[in-house]
Image 1 (cartoon, one colour):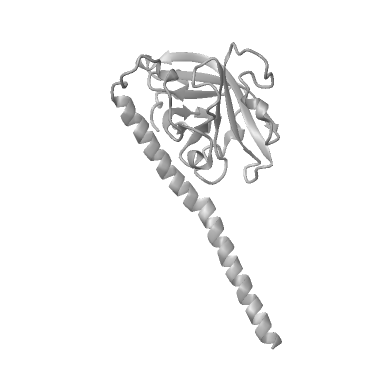
Image 2: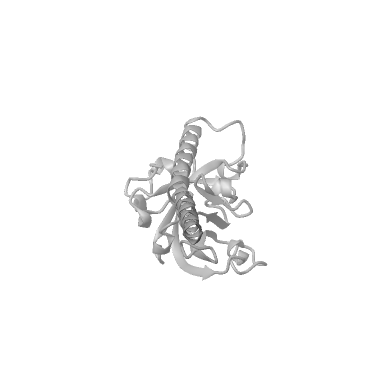
Length: 226
């Protein structure tokens, strides 16, 4: 009787271990595979759209509406790799963040006065911001849109609580201030394998240049490769 119970308990532990192993494999491998494939498709869609003439509108490209989940730009961060690039999609819900990095809809668009704020996973689901903690003051982040390159320089990084929504203010930490600068905020979970804090990277616009003038020097000629 005891031997049978012990054998049954052992089999239960083995089964539970296999279930945990499969779940970990799914989280660490499969979600990354699916997210990278989805991001590649978003990148292709953006590039294809950019090869076509802008649809009938008199609005500036930065002002045109973008549907939730739609890709509209790229982020390039040389500090994270010579050809590091990820598409930016509109929205920060889980399906959006599984296809690239997500733009907070209530914040400014690339190059606009205000706070261009972006979120990304640091672990699983493509983990585009896995190494975001490697960014330091003076590093650059380049946002690429249909017609322009926007080069931001990192000012500082901070660790905050998950409910610190002030980081998304047009002037972070000053909710009643009228923005005059063109700012950048990158957000992700901290530490990498948990979510009880947020890692925040703040920056400001250093340069804006037309696509016709070629990529900024920070990309060393590798810009545009998603």
